[in-house]
Image 1 (cartoon, rainbow, N blue to C red):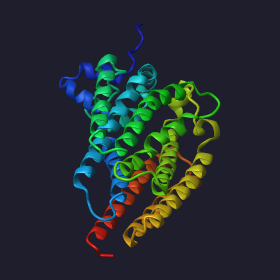
Image 2 (cartoon, rainbow, N blue to C red; image 1 turned 30 degrees about the vertical axis):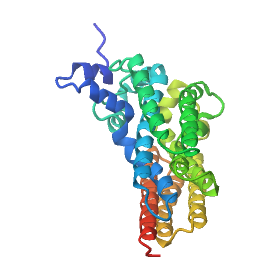
Image 3 (cartoon, rainbow, N blue to C red; image 1 turned 180 degrees about the horizontal axis):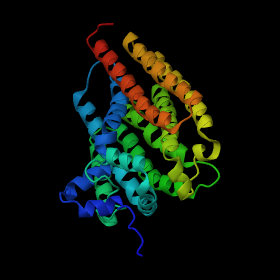
Image 4 (tube, rainbow, N blue to C red; image 1 turned 180 degrees about the vertical axis):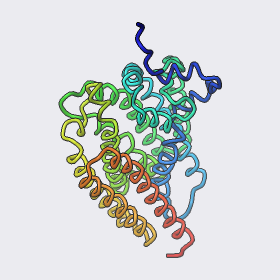
Length: 333
């Protein structure tokens, strides 16, 4: 008697679908712009508006945000290219995991899979697309005056090298999750990049790096809790696979407190107003409370909810900072 066929992999289901998305939409999925785009937009905007306390510089602001979205999207594509072999194995391992398939659909709504690993986009085309996006961001960086263009080009170059290095380290680490530190840098550097497009390096830039680095570090831990079973299958070491959910929940709580303290320091150094402080307090209550609940109820579904709450925290922080800056521009205080 022949064996029953296994479930279709996302790539196979995509190939057999009656209505297939265009190749262009597969390239859009590689950027993950609909899932992560708002957060990327926000963190570059955060740094840029803090660099403009006396009034808006609209041309610089638009270029910073555009550079951030295009460059970060290029990094996502480069990540998928560097991770294509591991992702192919992951698609096979995760084919029976409904939550894994749902997360693929959230991040990549048009194909519902990883386009390069699934064979929808060739590796060469994916790499060319990534380098084209990164090249566009570098061209935009050159429109800024010196020394700001050099700050931005250095950040772009370092991040371009670090992205595939992160993928390599992530899949080879066996004793300690070093890759988490690299991943947090790739996000944490974004607000300082927005700030350095207009200002020179100072304490504000350093505090912005610290605050978003700590936030991203905690965010990554929550992501790892959701992906722990698949990481074990692939032999990838994370804090969750090493030390368990309760330790990670406690660690996320500590990181949230430290990230909030860093944001308060940013508020203090930039002499910002009550709107920013109120946003920091509201966001802190939400995120620290969620992490505390996760500690007392260390369940994967609670960690999954924490991912959304951490994203809301960042959005609140950015919204409060932008509102505070607008009030200062209008001389309300």
